[in-house]
Length: 355
Ligand code: NCD
Image (cartoon, rainbow, N blue to C red; front, side, top):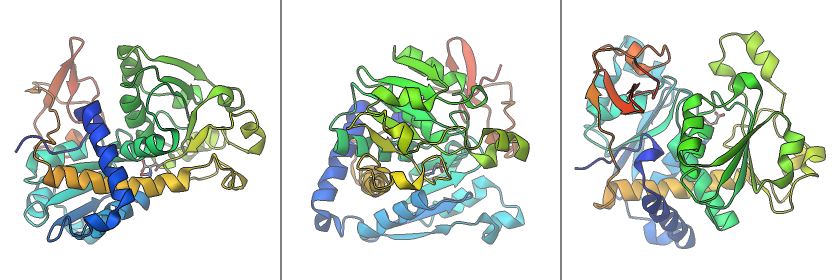
């Protein structure tokens, strides 16, 4: 079996993304044709962190395909509470299920799980690092609602440092022709440097803004995100950042008639509720598109032999990753897997520089 793990969207080519979007649209058009597509198959959802949409849309996706689901949404109700390590949990679950969807507060966990799983592993969010299936959700939404994934001016606003959805989104959309980005955040919550490197590698135009009211003017899409309270070191630091950027009716007056507003949800208060009725507000519809995107992903991973994802070349480094948020810090049996980027050694789990 080639690589069937979706850890980072980098592993999916533009053609594979296109294939997934097409499949999602076909399912939307005739869902009844897929009612038995996964008869007898089991999806395990291992959620070590809270979730509403990602977990339930994966579960619904599998149920609508005729499969079944097992899993936990509170690791304290599993043997994790007794001190079981990730490797043992995965070795066991991969003997029960045909596919695993995992979310964890620590960076690189899905990658670590994939090393020990006999079945495909899908990253449903690993700390502040990545969230590839949210990006597939966003891409299906864009394709259905804007009719294109290129030639877009995209504003991303909020917690660009800790928001994993933003990282995966920029990584994916920077591969398409002539997309440009406006990065709207406070200096403290600006995107990590490795995301800037990606924008530059793809020669994408980008600007940094601290004014949502100004930035909104010529965007095709505005992607709002919440400030990720759980990833702050202290409540004071969070308090200083919350409510800095709020999209309200007044700011929206400056936007184009056909700009779309997306948000991975949950919303806290970065979009006022009175905007929900504006035809440009698509975040609830987006969550529904996500379910079809996940149905398509499950089908491609389980049934399409040609749908093999690319793999990075790695070596075992003599150094351990020092990122305190990386899974290698807590699961000490993990090898020091690394890859090379611009002459530097990067951690294969969390993408931070090792040496
Ligand atoms: C996001 C997440 O978990 O990263 N939610 C989601 O999956 N739709 C966004 C967030 O929590 O802010």
